[in-house]
Image (cartoon, rainbow, N blue to C red; front, side, top):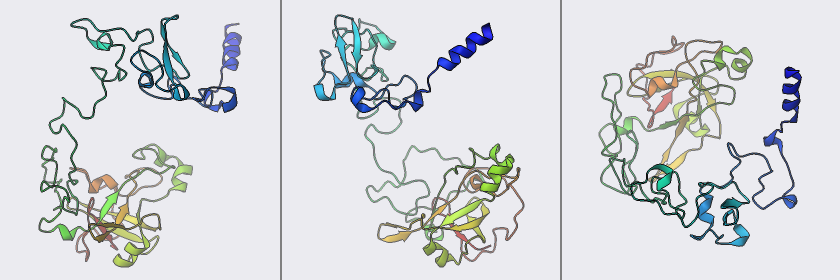
Length: 311
């Protein structure tokens, strides 16, 4: 009987994500269209949609409001606030945690319940944001004389050499940048999906994605091999020439991007060089090279200012 009861309860459960109640049959927030994990709350900090007294600032856009009769927050959305915290509540001296959030402070993820334009504590820089170029950017900082964030963390290691940046000597040796991304057919670093034959068949090889313009500039051919060189290492990849990788114009010159998915390694049905090998400290070769070893190339390249050439 217990098994039957469990099956009956399971059958009564609703696939919340599949709900499609028409908008004309519910409030403007549409809480019964799909599901917003975990509490089906559609707008964070929605206490801010009501004034200090708990009344909506705008009735047409009302989300939640204070119901004095019930002694709790109610509304079209799931209240993102202490449910029974009245607008008149003020924390006593020495209060901590949620008890320190007054009834007029909507931003409950902050210690003081206030909206922050900047972080007043916990950072070694700031308080207001500033633009710094990445550690290996091929361009000088156009806004400040300070090229990089002065409090950035640098990992000093013989296998983690940094490339020159901006107007530093040698920066022109590494004229390209790389970007990395995931593929639908693989999962994280690929340690699980590369052992599944049907997924490995769908994405059978580590590749570098380049624009037609960069392919012409470097003499790369679609489906052939390229070597990507950084100050740290060299990796090889099949060439994928697509118009998706569009050249950018930055500070008056053309900048090419090289796409490198990060799912490959030395084991599984599909193996290939590890993209992280060119970008992380102390990484080792993930597989024997099938072409050149990354030395004696005519055209050096860079990651975050990287490039590629035929091996």
